[in-house]
Image (cartoon, rainbow, N blue to C red):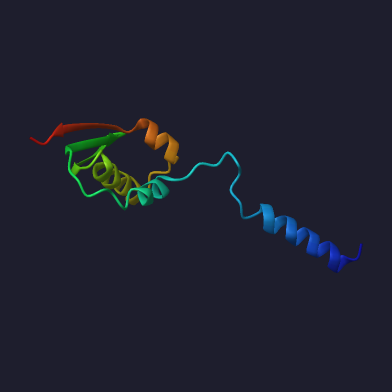
Length: 98
């Protein structure tokens, strides 16, 4: 195999695998925040969501708005925990609207 052809093979392998995250990689809290940008337009009640000492309280529809604000705050604060860790560690409570 010639050097130029070998270079193409190496480039193809690096191109295919070098830019992909490892299969066990998890999204970031900023990715999670992006998922909650669009929430349904309803209001179940006032919801407070908390993760690791950071809280957000919002009038929410199924916790969506409160989670979105919390995840954006965590992203802005530079939290590096994975999305899965943040989701698992987030607790929310809702006071229903009457």
